[in-house]
Image 1: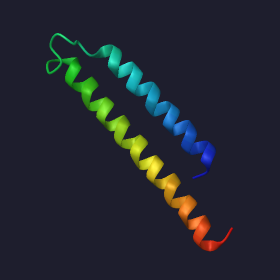
Image 2 (image 1 turned 60 degrees about the vertical axis):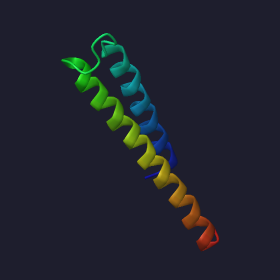
Image 3 (image 1 turned 45 degrees about the vertical axis):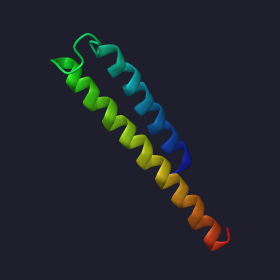
Image 4 (image 1 turned 180 degrees about the vertical axis):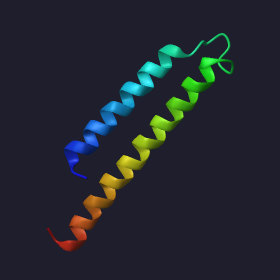
Amino acid sequence: MTKIVSIVLIVIAVALIVYNATVIDFNNPLQGDSVIALIGIVAALCAIVLIVIFMMSKKIQQKVEGN
């Protein structure tokens, strides 16, 4: 996975977080569609963390190989 693909995936995940944040009913955040939106936000945050870990591991791998 190249750096551009990683950045595009992070942007998509951030867009999903923003969209799901608009769906949440802050008066009842644990009922109805708000629960699904919260799950979507958590999933997108997990995806961002995994992509960042992957990018960091690639940088470490390049330094170890000497490129």
